[in-house]
Image (cartoon, rainbow, N blue to C red; front, top):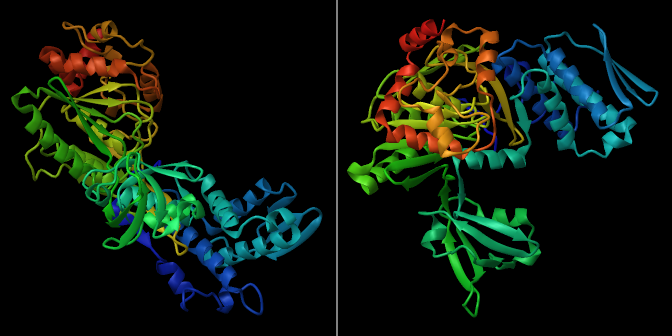
Length: 531
């Protein structure tokens, strides 16, 4: 999942004010005159479709960072029909909308540009007529058509707003918030279903399931009779409920019958490796437990390594982001107090200010953060906050530059609409979107070698060109483009990053020079000396 930074409080369900005010009847049907398109009223399927279009468009109008009109959303969505049948076209004038399919034409009176419900009803009506006129449209599943139209409404707004149907949305929620399950990953090879991994401290681990075990039946049903989706549904379910497994294990004559009680499972996104006197921590995604889990692993590193722990590397390479509040929690593990980020947007709720929590003892060991072109969103918030505060040296290539916040709305069909509603301003005061994080030590376009690490970190010189040290706050877009061009974003995970981090943490003089080089007064002084 490529999940964007999203405040947990913005996970919304159902419909909100404007829709209930406009059609103040039972939300499952639309039969008021203002909401109807046919004299005998819509079918249940049409009502569900109109409700979905209305609530998604309402959420876009309320939350999106840009001001848009229902007319614009409806027409851009309907225009997507031509992508599945090139003979379908949509034309509009101020007072009318025209549907044409292979020479057949239907004309409709256009609602006012701001009439949200009427445009949603018209969208559904045009879809019905397109089905009757185009065999290709008629053969397309209703949920696929709905997804096509909603994606069309979002396409011209920004790259990150999106709609996902219920099956995909449920997987996203499971990754982000957790799910009821037993804690295994599976390998599927036709009817051969094996346990690929068992998460620690989960019901599967407690029950003694092992990687390599072959599942032969679930709840008494042979796996040959089940699809992969059926198997997942058997394994998942409400916490405290039982699932019965029959597993074949190498060296055991008969299949083992194991009853496992499901629990809430949150995928682990943090890992720890202890190499010499450095703790290497990797975050793959920011979900509901990332901050808590990182704190636990920091404590484990101190228990394991004791006074030998001399430094920490936080690897955020290829981390696409996740929950915004978790990025703040992660920064708060290393920074006692201070700004982490601000968000600004059109919706009043988007104007927020986030600071380090300051309610715990923070980690003080010297620290390096690894980023690359796949580091985005929440991972960029963490890297920029630690860099701007002088808490860590950032190493790698320029990050992705995804500096917007999305709010996630759960739709009535159990899908999800993700809407961009805010821009991120870093702790250093610059806009994160398109700019991203430019590392303190750049490894772009460099061969992997320890010799290169030594060259990038000479003991008696600044680790960066003076042009890279200018205060980010003073840069316009052109200067930012130049800055990023000096350290191009790359997706490869270079071992050079790790060589540099090791050398940096092994040599306190170089580490402190790198930290001080990113402070505004030092940057200004070095830039002046370069002139």
